[in-house]
Length: 258
Image (cartoon, rainbow, N blue to C red):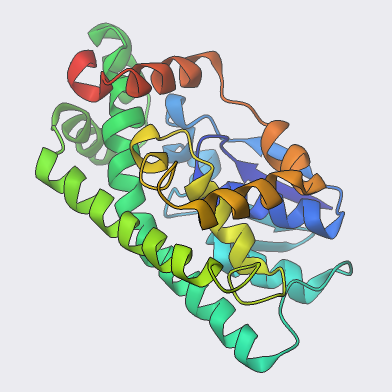
């Protein structure tokens, strides 16, 4: 039995959903409601002490970290092979996975600024206090409260966007010569990159939209794969998530919610 602990707005679990879909595997979703801080509660921390999403349970095996989970899926289950047979392309796949992992921190800064902080700050103060008071670790509750009350500097957001744009430039250059990120072989690298291109963050998508045609054509190919509907379309944001996305796309972001 395969269980994936998942949250629909996060990029990391989306990679794993895509991989499971490409492999044609049946799995059970365990939604971790990040907006309710369920990732910081005892039940989830018992599975993933870092309180991060995703987590994958396969029978008795328990795994964390999206890229590690994807390597495990590729090693364990039958289905289409998503590592290039060519050793040079396979090396490039691993380089892309490393690049994407490094870019994730920059993406997270933008996500917090545009989506996560506004979602929490729209709550009534009493509701927010009750939510934080319900956490099992009072020191973690204090850390999250301080995070909620601290603005992310505009300069930090700009630096994060610059880091992402640099990776998109690299991606555009690669796709000028090849169909997929590692060459002519569709691989884990393409699955891992998709959530950062096909993103609810309009500040991020603006970095490539109508500016980098290679990425746009690659995205069209990705969206045409059956795995896209199975792993992305099938898991839409909640009403609260859609509201946060709409606010961010209208230019409100956290400052309008404060």
